Image (cartoon, rainbow, N blue to C red; front, side, top):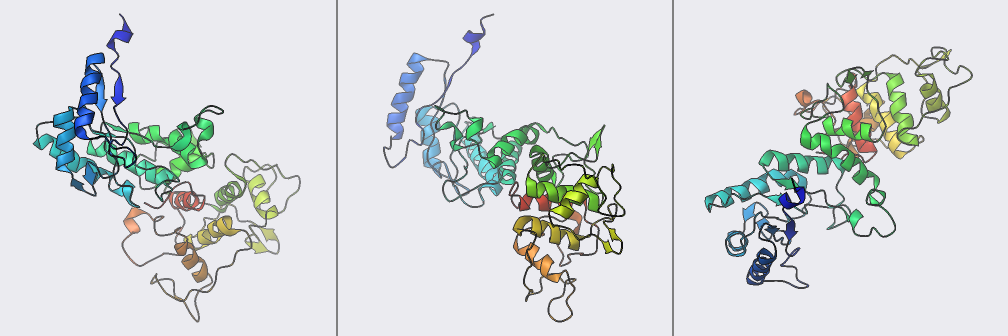
Length: 382
């Protein structure tokens, strides 16, 4: 069988045909489409327009859609949606209204999302989480395709596509397959889990390995121990995949040489990020579970440096974290973490919607992953 004979070529006749630098009318595009059909009658044709050309906000531009579908005769529509700050939260609404209108005119052709947003353009700098959310929304709304838009392919004469990706873009590419096809790294963290994107981004960046290898699990609801927290902070400081040297002498009385966490507790001590949990003798308490209040301290210091000290808060946002005279030690840390965006997105869904922070509750591994991913800029707030 001649497989080449079965291939249908796909053409975007003019990218952003309405661009101010050289606009082409729909009549001109129709002429171009007719010429393309004469050359290749099996070609799949579309034409794209600038942001808002087919869907402006959540409103379909019926005139432009009719012209491209009925007059030009495109085989699929390729809208460029408005690049607003909330673009990733509106993908499903925009796809839905466009599909509904296409169906209403008897042309339920595919919707191909060609250029939603890219980093460093139009005042946007999308995070991995935002790209993931947009891709999921496109899939759920029934889009035929969603294109990860990047500058990386603009100049390939001296380097490869992947070499031109920044760290967020590379980790996005690495994780998109799981988002689109439903595959997950950890059996206990499905795509539907609230912390899925955060956990996947940390794994893609080689910050975490999970709690079990066979089967591969993350244990998202388990409390994060001080030993596990040490791994997060040390890799947060030194980078994904970092492995400290095994210590040759004991620093903490309760951290024996040869324990899996010995090198992590030792590195955390030598980097100046822990004073231990007891001084006489010096102890680390590796198996004690971190509280949510303690988590704000080590993630803030990972973000701002080991000597960071926040100022005293003046406004109370959580009913269980008072401010002013008599405020608990953790108040300044909790409110500083809130200001950095580390707390509001990082709470189990069942506990959202009230005014509590729950400072003394155990920090779950899912919550820790969320805080870590945001602190490292791997995933933005949903």
